[in-house]
Length: 378
Image (cartoon, rainbow, N blue to C red; front, side, top):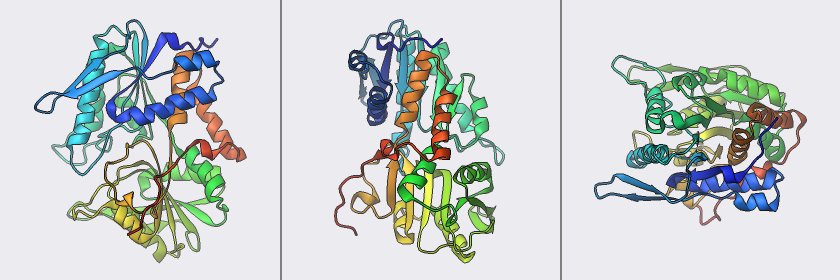
């Protein structure tokens, strides 16, 4: 039997960078679980006062009582072309976990829409770290035995779940993307092809295409002498099709534009490419060219999620022609809180989103985040 959902027994907390995302989770939790008004009034965000010591060290003080309670803690990680923001967010999380451990909490459920350092999941050469394992080790050390579960989205490699001694729920974003294609883009399955930008994403693309009733193709890549990755060939028929690329992470955008050029050479629609990525880092490349500039110039339409906090300055501050939409993951994480509190199956909740894709129902508007008003495009 499920346990009662009682906000008196738990506290929702957020580190600084995750506060907008956490508020969206709370809003959805109130909206979609049919709670009474009295219960909804109690679902609020607890307070953590954060500041910085002289010298740049994060400082945190808990201003909400968590003794003998369950804590649902959120952290997002800001990415920029300089490391300090990301590194600060990682250290802040560790400081907050240590603070909670010493505040007599019963257990901690940790929610991170994007897990940093996950792209270094294996040694590709000698004398290299496995940073994806390190980040789990740091969390385990800071939170101790109080960390009950870690919830994240679309790990770079499924096997990374095994790097953590604590249970990991690795949620998948493709049902949201599939619903978007059905309801917002309204693409006919006969007119588009799902594309994986590399062989590592084959299973993701195959599953995505199967649910949407269309075909898929794989980009074959090679690594040249200086370590750069080059798109070499396309496996699958893309002729006269609209390419719909799906990936877990978009970084500098170079791979996306290279794949587009290759797809066009193989007869794909040259007018537009839709690129879906769970985690939009949108960094500058080695030549300091922003990813956003490449998408804008190549007419690539990006659909991403809110797993990465919005940057302070972006190329699309004055033009949204490249950014099609941002979809929120907050319903997923709302479900995760509810299931962790009641003991219900999170898998069954996520299966519900998959069924919506198969039967083409549900409301994609629940996932759309309004973009800022357009200004003059440059």
